[in-house]
Amino acid sequence: MIFDKKSEPGRSGKPTGGSVESRREAPSLKVDPGPPAPSGRSGRSESSVIGSSILVQGDMSGDEDLMIQGRIEGSITLKKNLVTIGEDGRVNATVSAKSIRVEGTVEGELRGAEQIVVTRTGNVSGNLVAPRVTLEDGCRFKGAIDMEGADTGGAGKVTDIMSGTSVADESGKAR
Image (cartoon, rainbow, N blue to C red; front, top):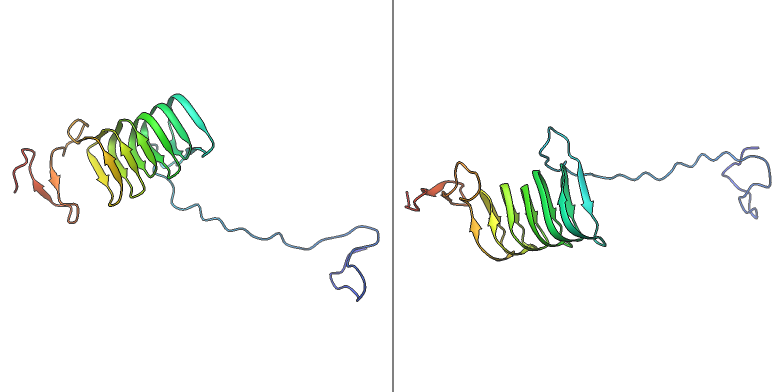
Protein backbone atom coordinates (compact mmCIF):
# COMPACT_ATOMS: atom_id res chain seq x y z
CA MET A 1 0.00 0.00 0.00
CA ILE A 2 1.34 3.43 -0.89
CA PHE A 3 0.43 6.32 1.34
CA ASP A 4 -1.20 9.08 -0.63
CA LYS A 5 -0.44 12.57 0.67
CA LYS A 6 -4.08 13.59 0.15
CA SER A 7 -6.02 12.70 3.25
CA GLU A 8 -9.70 12.53 3.84
CA PRO A 9 -11.24 14.87 6.43
CA GLY A 10 -11.12 13.32 9.87
CA ARG A 11 -8.17 11.02 9.08
CA SER A 12 -4.88 11.56 10.84
CA GLY A 13 -2.89 11.19 7.64
CA LYS A 14 -1.01 8.19 9.05
CA PRO A 15 -1.15 4.80 7.36
CA THR A 16 -2.89 1.99 9.20
CA GLY A 17 -0.59 -0.77 8.06
CA GLY A 18 1.53 -2.07 5.20
CA SER A 19 4.55 -0.35 3.72
CA VAL A 20 4.86 3.37 3.21
CA GLU A 21 6.74 5.02 0.38
CA SER A 22 7.69 8.58 1.16
CA ARG A 23 8.39 10.95 -1.69
CA ARG A 24 9.30 13.95 0.46
CA GLU A 25 12.50 15.63 -0.57
CA ALA A 26 14.96 16.49 2.13
CA PRO A 27 15.30 20.24 2.54
CA SER A 28 18.27 21.50 0.61
CA LEU A 29 20.99 23.33 2.47
CA LYS A 30 23.22 25.57 0.43
CA VAL A 31 26.58 26.25 2.00
CA ASP A 32 28.94 28.80 0.56
CA PRO A 33 32.43 27.67 1.57
CA GLY A 34 33.85 31.02 0.50
CA PRO A 35 37.20 31.38 -1.19
CA PRO A 36 39.78 28.72 -0.42
CA ALA A 37 42.25 29.65 2.27
CA PRO A 38 45.71 30.54 0.96
CA SER A 39 48.12 27.69 1.38
CA GLY A 40 51.82 27.23 1.12
CA ARG A 41 51.32 24.13 -1.00
CA SER A 42 50.33 23.79 -4.62
CA GLY A 43 46.63 24.67 -4.84
CA ARG A 44 45.54 22.67 -1.80
CA SER A 45 43.72 24.50 0.95
CA GLU A 46 43.84 22.18 3.93
CA SER A 47 43.39 23.83 7.27
CA SER A 48 42.83 22.94 10.90
CA VAL A 49 40.66 24.75 13.42
CA ILE A 50 41.26 25.11 17.14
CA GLY A 51 37.71 25.57 18.44
CA SER A 52 36.66 28.16 20.99
CA SER A 53 36.44 25.64 23.86
CA ILE A 54 39.97 24.25 23.27
CA LEU A 55 43.09 25.15 25.27
CA VAL A 56 46.45 24.03 23.85
CA GLN A 57 49.60 24.31 25.96
CA GLY A 58 52.95 23.56 24.36
CA ASP A 59 54.62 23.72 20.97
CA MET A 60 52.65 23.31 17.75
CA SER A 61 54.04 22.73 14.27
CA GLY A 62 52.64 21.41 11.03
CA ASP A 63 52.17 21.76 7.32
CA GLU A 64 48.68 23.22 6.88
CA ASP A 65 46.84 26.46 7.53
CA LEU A 66 45.54 27.02 11.06
CA MET A 67 42.50 28.94 12.35
CA ILE A 68 42.58 29.59 16.10
CA GLN A 69 39.31 30.36 17.87
CA GLY A 70 40.43 28.88 21.20
CA ARG A 71 43.45 29.50 23.43
CA ILE A 72 47.09 28.66 22.69
CA GLU A 73 50.01 28.97 25.11
CA GLY A 74 53.52 28.08 23.90
CA SER A 75 54.78 28.35 20.32
CA ILE A 76 53.32 27.88 16.85
CA THR A 77 55.54 27.12 13.85
CA LEU A 78 53.91 26.79 10.42
CA LYS A 79 56.65 28.17 8.16
CA LYS A 80 54.86 27.54 4.85
CA ASN A 81 51.31 28.35 5.90
CA LEU A 82 48.76 30.89 7.10
CA VAL A 83 47.92 31.25 10.79
CA THR A 84 44.70 33.12 11.59
CA ILE A 85 43.85 34.10 15.14
CA GLY A 86 40.07 34.46 14.96
CA GLU A 87 38.04 37.03 16.90
CA ASP A 88 37.53 34.56 19.76
CA GLY A 89 41.18 33.40 19.64
CA ARG A 90 43.54 34.11 22.53
CA VAL A 91 47.23 33.39 21.92
CA ASN A 92 50.12 33.73 24.37
CA ALA A 93 52.90 32.40 22.16
CA THR A 94 55.65 33.01 19.67
CA VAL A 95 54.07 32.52 16.23
CA SER A 96 56.16 31.83 13.10
CA ALA A 97 54.34 31.36 9.79
CA LYS A 98 54.35 32.36 6.13
CA SER A 99 51.48 34.79 6.82
CA ILE A 100 49.72 35.74 10.04
CA ARG A 101 46.29 37.34 10.39
CA VAL A 102 45.19 38.61 13.82
CA GLU A 103 41.50 39.17 14.47
CA GLY A 104 41.66 38.23 18.19
CA THR A 105 44.19 38.76 20.98
CA VAL A 106 47.90 37.92 20.90
CA GLU A 107 50.65 38.31 23.50
CA GLY A 108 54.05 37.40 22.08
CA GLU A 109 56.26 37.77 19.05
CA LEU A 110 54.81 37.29 15.57
CA ARG A 111 57.21 36.36 12.72
CA GLY A 112 55.74 36.34 9.23
CA ALA A 113 57.90 35.29 6.27
CA GLU A 114 55.59 37.22 3.91
CA GLN A 115 53.20 39.37 5.94
CA ILE A 116 51.35 40.11 9.16
CA VAL A 117 47.89 41.70 9.19
CA VAL A 118 46.28 42.97 12.39
CA THR A 119 42.60 43.61 11.65
CA ARG A 120 40.38 46.22 13.27
CA THR A 121 39.30 43.63 15.89
CA GLY A 122 42.89 42.52 16.56
CA ASN A 123 44.78 43.24 19.76
CA VAL A 124 48.54 42.56 19.80
CA SER A 125 50.99 43.07 22.63
CA GLY A 126 54.39 42.04 21.29
CA ASN A 127 56.80 42.50 18.42
CA LEU A 128 56.01 42.04 14.73
CA VAL A 129 58.72 40.86 12.32
CA ALA A 130 57.78 40.64 8.62
CA PRO A 131 58.55 42.33 5.29
CA ARG A 132 54.94 43.58 5.09
CA VAL A 133 52.91 44.65 8.12
CA THR A 134 49.36 45.99 8.04
CA LEU A 135 47.69 47.55 11.05
CA GLU A 136 44.06 48.22 10.19
CA ASP A 137 42.27 51.26 11.56
CA GLY A 138 40.82 50.40 14.97
CA CYS A 139 43.24 47.62 15.91
CA ARG A 140 45.22 47.74 19.16
CA PHE A 141 48.99 47.29 19.09
CA LYS A 142 51.76 47.68 21.65
CA GLY A 143 55.26 46.66 20.65
CA ALA A 144 57.84 47.12 17.93
CA ILE A 145 57.70 46.46 14.20
CA ASP A 146 60.79 45.12 12.43
CA MET A 147 60.49 45.06 8.65
CA GLU A 148 64.24 44.66 8.08
CA GLY A 149 64.78 41.58 10.26
CA ALA A 150 62.72 39.46 7.89
CA ASP A 151 64.38 38.12 4.74
CA THR A 152 63.14 40.75 2.30
CA GLY A 153 64.19 42.35 -0.90
CA GLY A 154 62.28 45.56 -0.20
CA ALA A 155 62.66 45.94 3.53
CA GLY A 156 63.30 49.41 4.76
CA LYS A 157 61.27 51.12 2.05
CA VAL A 158 58.52 53.43 3.22
CA THR A 159 55.39 53.02 1.13
CA ASP A 160 52.33 55.24 0.90
CA ILE A 161 49.57 52.76 1.79
CA MET A 162 46.95 54.62 -0.24
CA SER A 163 48.83 54.68 -3.55
CA GLY A 164 51.28 51.81 -3.00
CA THR A 165 54.18 53.96 -4.23
CA SER A 166 57.52 54.18 -2.52
CA VAL A 167 58.00 57.52 -0.76
CA ALA A 168 61.42 56.94 0.82
CA ASP A 169 64.47 54.79 0.22
CA GLU A 170 66.26 52.47 2.65
CA SER A 171 68.02 55.37 4.37
CA GLY A 172 64.65 57.02 5.09
CA LYS A 173 65.32 59.96 2.77
CA ALA A 174 62.22 61.18 0.96
CA ARG A 175 62.23 60.81 -2.82
